[in-house]
Image 1 (cartoon, one colour):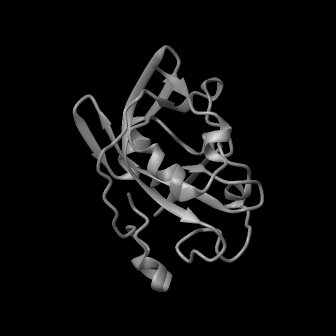
Image 2 (image 1 turned 90 degrees about the vertical axis):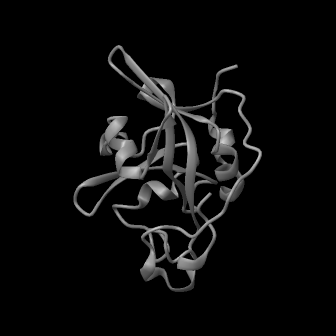
Amino acid sequence: MRAILTKKFYQRQTSRVAKELLGKWLVRKTGISTIAGMITEVEVYDGFGDRASHAWRRKTKRNKVMFEEGGVWYVYLVYGMHEMLNIVTREEGYPAAILIRGVLVAHAHMNGPGKITQFFKIDRRLNGKRAERKNGLWIEDRGLRPKHIKKGRRIGVEYAGRWKHALLRL
């Protein structure tokens, strides 16, 4: 069974969506080429109070996509060289997104969001686009359900005070 996730899937509680993304497949189509990999690790950024989130202070030109309704891509550049892929969750006006951190492709595990976007040829042209086939990047349910999910601290958010300790990496 291959079913593309709909916007209804993403318009729910961010932590629940994050858990359910594990085992789903990230699919990228460019021209005649299609590549896919199983999502193995994600990080949650949820709401106005999350000091590790780009949106915790206010809405800006950079983070405005996080305030859209769930099911759109939030792609941004970090350290001037790595694109980061996030899927927006929840309802319009509430800033929340999930960073895709790990993907398994043909028995090769890609850890690190920069490696993923490079391999899948993802850049900021996808920022704000809906996660669907016509935009060339989507997520599919192929029927796999992980039995064990580990939680850990998010990576690279030392500036976030107590939020750096939150167990929001799955």
